[in-house]
Image (cartoon, rainbow, N blue to C red; front, side, top):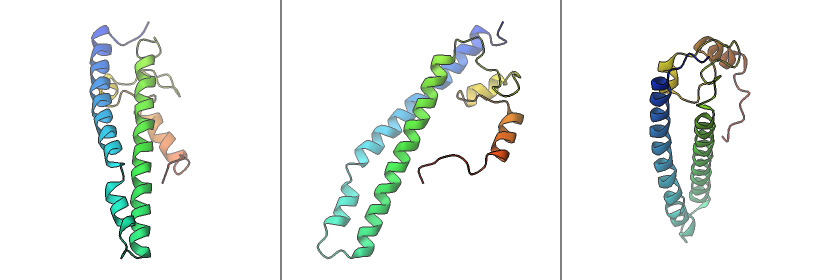
Length: 132
């Protein structure tokens, strides 16, 4: 039997949906921004030099990396939403300890207790495959 009550799950679901909504709005803003108007203006200037062009390309790369990060975060939230009703939701994937409800509300995608997450970050530092 799960240690999470129905109220805990409702609170986690509400937090998850709030984070999802904020992330979707941020992604929409990033997509509108990625019309590349600010970057294309720099690239389209006849008097622009190679430094302007390099800046525009770099800004475009950063925008793409930000969007990639947000897509991954949205996928993690969706995975958490799908697992929320599973009996194992809220149990640490490493030690099977109960993840505190407050942690799950703050970060619904948490799959590790604080101790195991700290250990994971310490032992796997630099091994994540980021975009930048």
